[in-house]
Image 1: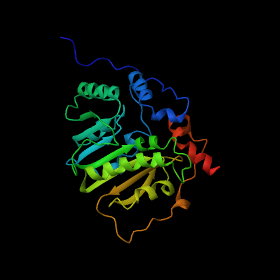
Image 2 (image 1 turned 90 degrees about the horizontal axis):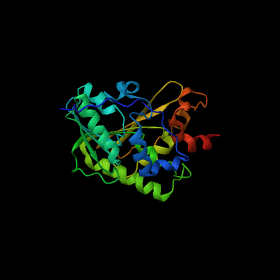
Image 3 (image 1 turned 120 degrees about the horizontal axis):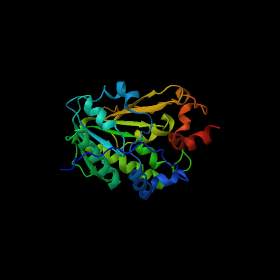
Length: 257
């Protein structure tokens, strides 16, 4: 009988799209995932493991948005969190992820094709929801980062409302992103949400933001704090800019020049 597992394709260098707006095209992702074995946006799990483990336990039910071909769910599983559901809009990404996890013996991880703007889950069914670079895709053609286009904000709010809905009453949303606090906090702090908002950074020289949003812990007196002065400067010469990640930073770079 033929083995379920086939030899993994070698890692292929990702082809950069002609424009950042191509990231909004489902066809781009299907084509990419049909060729690409693995790619990690915004660093791999080892770089933020110390941050994520403060909010995830072996008993946590976890939802990962936009899993793509990342290995984050595997790393979480190795750390003892086994109740994991991953979703992606691309049927090809889902099929490839299912095969890869089965091959490696991670049979308990569920992988579903689903749209993060219309989450197909019951209310309050996850302890933790995690996204890494997935929300950033919604902003690639947002225009002025201080005043994003209405159609962009409509999608972003649909995503966040869905996340808020599926989180348990004391659940936590973790967002790993390029989005600086002076752009993201006003969105996270919208009156529709009951979560508190905290953040930290990781990375050497070139910083990524790690937001922790705890549902049900927002104070009525809480005000949006101005942390613009605390935002790390962006180094155009850092080695990270050799990767594809820099495309998500384009609008912020232009604004800060």
